[in-house]
View 1 (cartoon, rainbow, N blue to C red):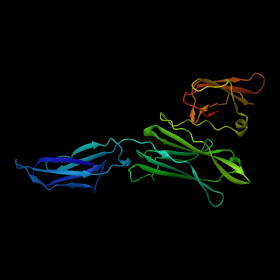
View 2 (view 1 turned 180 degrees about the vertical axis):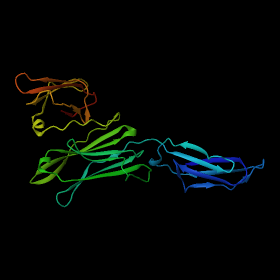
View 3 (view 1 turned 135 degrees about the vertical axis):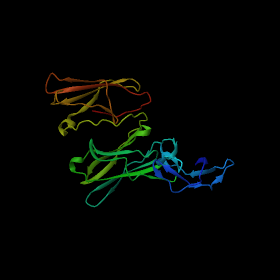
View 4 (view 1 turned 90 degrees about the vertical axis):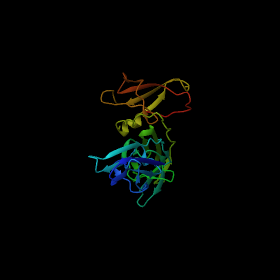
Length: 296
């Protein structure tokens, strides 16, 4: 694209003009024609900036600044580039076994704009690392952003059955996607098994709230029962979870659909016949859903 600005009716002819991106002077791609004397005895000129916008130019301000001895301050004209946003394409998690049983996890995030991005790695619900607005984002030939997120991890025996998750959030397009691997122990060597990927939520309005960590004792005792017989897509479904050896005081219960919290329809009731309580949740499924993952 070309940006053009004309300066007319100035005298004397000594004048300074600059193109800027935000507040940074652009040193290449601009050209200013030779001064011309107009019929009124004043001078005029035209300056052009040629550029190929990339994702890094999203919502950036391009300015043309003029300095002249008759001016007490610069004259600045601005244009704002309203470029389209694009949600990323996210690869599956790839792995590589290094020396000392260190496993490298890697995920590629491709073709997105603008460059605002958040990547968080978890094991279960424990955060391993976070890249908020990563600095190593690059643009490809198509002008869109690419980023590769990597993390090294040494699994322990206690990590068997846990899930390595990578959560990718692109706030401008309300995009959030999760990719995951399950850590399994086989023949005393770590084997990674890929789990089904969570679906994209186009209407995501904020980062999901992580539940408080629970002890392995509670985790092992949590079993979910479907109270509704033969649940049908598009109808209300009631699920029940019994938490053994605990009561509702001092215990927090969180229900999730996929990776997103269910904020309504929950009821917790202490069990009268012994230590423990019941957590019920009623939710309405979507008509187009063939299956969905519910967690407590």
